[in-house]
Amino acid sequence: MDRHSRLAAALRGEPVDRPPVWFMRQAGRYMAEYRAIRERVSFLELCHDPALACEVTCQPVDRFGVDAAIVFSDILTIPEAMGCPVEFHPGRGPVLPEPIRTAADVERLVDPDIGSALPWVPETLRLFRAARPEVPILGFAGAPFTLLCYMVEGGGSKNWLALKQLLFQSPEVAQALLGRLADAVGAYLQAQVDAGAAAVQMFDTWAGILSPEDWRRFALPAAQRALSHVSGAPRIYFTRDSSPFLRMLPETGADVIGLDWRVDIAEAREVLGGMPVQGNMDPVALYAPPAEVRRRVHAICDAAGPRGHVFNLGHGVLPTTPLEGVEAMIAAVKERSG
Ligand code: CP3
Image (tube, rainbow, N blue to C red; front, top):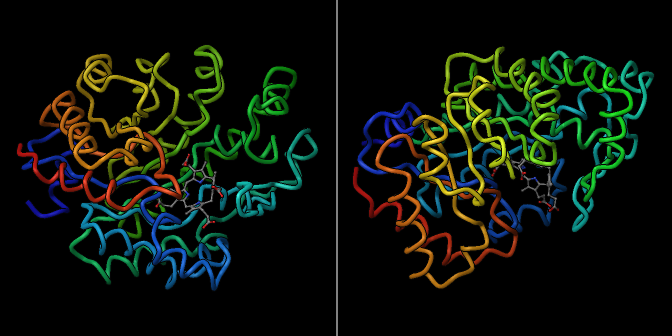
């Protein structure tokens, strides 16, 4: 099968010659080619330059022969376009120096016209499709709840105290912002489908910090609303730490569920009623000897079954990951047969 039909079939639960493989953050600091570009430009400059972003998107495709690319960008481009500035400090993760805490803060934000506010990502998609027409490319966005986390907290957090105070003390303020984020995220994902994305992934990285009841109240309606704006390509919903409410995830309306590594993939497929899944190798397993990486890949593929599985890590690849681990993972997936 060619890479386009392999990915499309797996995302629809149809027969494949073997599972397709790509992985989250596949373009990034663990690659010397990426670090060389980052010596010349900042991360945000890279995101805002379609020619360079396309070059970086191609790097893991050319080096490892993955079955799909993911457009190079970041989930925090939407808060930035809404008027909530974002900074990246090496080693510290993203910082949003003007966090949103009150109804007045929410009112000050703008509802961007996605086409003109964020032209880089559709342009990068188009450049990639011209440069590597044989390789499907995924678009992505942060889920409304995960974007809310960063906007309210002002960055990453251990306990998400500011965020949860807003959710529990002023739920109407949080819901107003979630609704606006959902519409922006939906329009942004659809713009990527229109630019030729073979599928789109919505990252709800932090949804697992919520109780099942609060997930249903805050994260679910916003995820549903965002995904309801998107048609024409399969939609993947990814969360971490979501095993306690795995059975509710199909209610997002997604076509495919992205799994982290804390859940048994066979059990997950049973709970999800055979819905296609993506995942679920522990990113730190790539530091193991190649034979152990290979054993783990085969164990995941055996448990997932031959259909409706896109091989991936359970979260993004880490910056110090050894290339041998990545190579062993991809070689092992390519040993599989349908
Ligand atoms: O997967 C890919 O190859 C596509 C590119 C991609 C990036 N970020 C590039 C990036 C994607 C899909 C993302 C999504 C993203 N960004 C998420 C959701 C997925 C996840 O990992 O949970 C989140 C939470 C963010 C926010 C963000 N941006 C974080 C936490 C960081 C890491 C900060 C750090 O220094 O470790 C970033 C920066 C970032 N995004 C980098 C890359 C390659 C590193 C930037 C650099 O070059 O210094």
